[in-house]
Amino acid sequence: MMIPACPLADLPRGEAFRLEIDPPVSVFHTEDGELFAIDDTCTHQDASLADGWVEDCWVECPLHASKFNLKTGAVDAPPAKLPVRTHEVVVEDGMIYVRLSEAAPNLPHCVAARLAGVPA
Amino acid sequence: MVGASLAGLSAARSLRKQGYDGRLVVIGDELHRPYDRPPLSKEFLAGTVDETELALEVDGEDLQAEWLLGVRATGLDRTERAVRLADGREVRVDGLVIATGAAARTLPGSEGLSGVHVVRTLDDARALRAELAQGGRLVVIGGGFIGAEVASTAHLLGLDVTVVEAAPTALAGPLGESMGAIVSALHADHGVRLLCGVGVKGLSGERRVDAVLLEDGRGIPADIVVVGVGARPCVEWLAGSGVALDNGVKCGADGRTSLAGVVAVGDCANWYDPHAGAYRRVEHWTGARERPDAAVATLLAGGATEPGAPRPPYFWSDQYGMKIQFAGHAAGADSVTVEEGAPDDRNVLAVYRRAGQPVAVLGMNQPRLFTRWRKQLGRTTS
Image 1 (tube, each protein chain N blue to C red):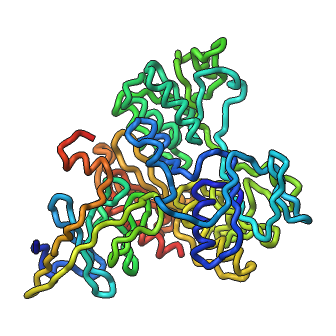
Image 2 (cartoon, rainbow over the protein chains, first blue to last red; image 1 turned 180 degrees about the horizontal axis):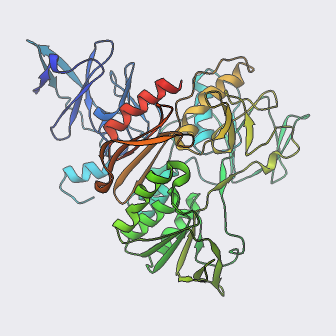
């Protein structure tokens, strides 16, 4: 499924755009001009990676400093242990689209429970 | 590797990542495999995170290490280059990473009195969790971060909570007076009593604690007492070893100690901070996680590496559903400005400056802005 995110012109390098779907997805525009999309929620706790610290092609969770690779979704070190999903980014006529991964997301259990409609 | 918590595990990972393929022995005084301590005063204590989730190792991770767990190191013999263990064994080493951490300070005279707890290890947290489940009146001695988190968790669990802090303002050390007062006001917001500026004289009770006695003569009835008055570095075992000690293990900016082939990381290590021109023992999770990389590079290179500038120290705290984040050093700031949000709304981004230069940043429920400021701080202090 292709979902429109935002116009490329609205996402400067070094910034991230959070796509408010469930679960949310973030598009990162790196300083080098590359675009990546990953699940926005850290796999450890409910934190938005769009608020994180981007360096090279890694984003560091704003809360507890686990880093996720924007290309592969891999996590570098604790406290997070599971990777985030990566999604394909397509730019067409100046618009950024995200093609969602069909893999199951690795959400922290408090968020997974909320999405399932169960109180955490 | 002496120490099997976050700093020790991170050093073991760094060794393998940096290409060391020799024998690796990890010695830890607790029986548990490496586990994450921050949740012990929060989610684990509240019962929303269980022990398996605390594991720091990833499923299937194998560092090809020999784990000697449940045994304390009691000495280092520099001539034999051997670590002595409490059970009489000796481990010969070519290189040594000291990561023995810190131990919770206790209250003199509280030994042998049941109902009195500290929160440092998994076993501490298990014991406290079992008692909190009984409910009752909790008195927390110390208004620092551990004390505040335990108070917040216990309040959530329905206990009647009082926090006693000897200083006039709680959290003034790490956050400064004005912001310390704002963050510690979270207690009153939630109906937790915070008594500041009064010391603790002692505890009363026969076999079980029944009250905390204050220096002003008051007694606070208590069913459970948590002592959160800081930690001391676990370095007694290094006495006489030739490893220079001063508020922990005295280390250079790259983790090297006074002995060749020996580095120290984590809460026990008092690293030189070139930016400040002073030694600083930083008891933060992020330091234990990040610094082993540099220390291991030093160890493997025989002490010839040039360390990169350390990032400003960073820590977080969760209290009453609020995300509190802090980076940098509050001491030495000559001004604190609220850049965003309002203290009364408990939603603040505050910047600490010295001579106009940012030296620290505090966020309360401001993760996005906090990250930006933290990044900027990293640039100006390095």
